[in-house]
Amino acid sequence: MAVDQANELAIDANDASLWAVTNQQLLKFDASGNPLLQINLSSLGLKEVRHLAADPYDSSLWLADEKKFVHLNSQGQLLGAWETSLSIQAIAVSLDQSLWLLGKKRLSHYSAQGVLLASQNLQALVKPEPKFLAIDSIDSSSNRLWLAGEKQLLQFDPSNLTQPVLKITLPDVTSGITLDTNSGTLWLMDKQNLIAYTRDGAWLKTVDLKTLSIKEPQRLAYDPVSLSLWLGHKTGLSRLTTDGTPVITLLNAKTVQLSFLL
Image (cartoon, rainbow, N blue to C red; front, side, top):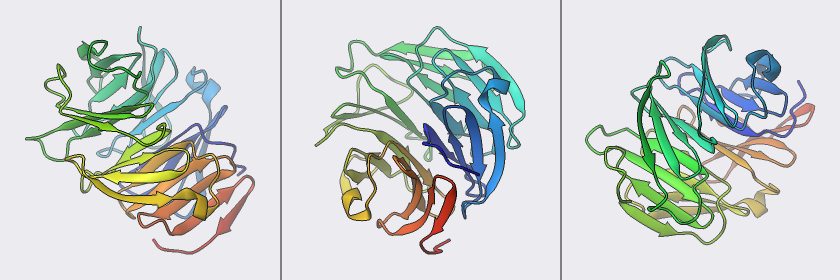
């Protein structure tokens, strides 16, 4: 199966399989990079899909274009489809299976059945327009919501979105974020690095992507089963350990096995 440039990535936390969306197709691979599913986006009624989020409980998948979001089961069959007035910038699934949608400085919260639960205008709270969203609901007593845009990383309490809990100034423009659902560590990607932060916003580590010959990184997803990271970049998809060791790379029409650390 040829691998075009991935627009977005999502991990199935139950079996470490990888979902990837290209301009025309939704693809699914197992943890070793073997193809499992190939679905044409036109069959789902979506245009230019840029957003994926996997449900850790039932292995279902949420996809969204600018105005429409759909719910699929683990085999890619349609469960439901809805439209929104938001211009969707990012989506994320909570551990309670509810869905968060980030619009242009607005957050909306939906049930798994597509019912709108709440909506919050962020206009007075954020300066750079946030483009990335992650939900940390590991600890039900202290849920956290992360937003990133340009050179700013913000953390909110999802039950009180009136003021950010944390504000972190970043060294470069953000190109993706993902959450380690085991520890709550947030991974952030810019043009040259992967940077890890604790749940409390403390810096943990930086991985230099230049040393791995990864050019123009664009998409990022964390695999909680193998404790590794998937990156979508100019020439394909790569999986790394959290120390930055290459595991596998999918380059266009062929798979290049670097090592097996599953």
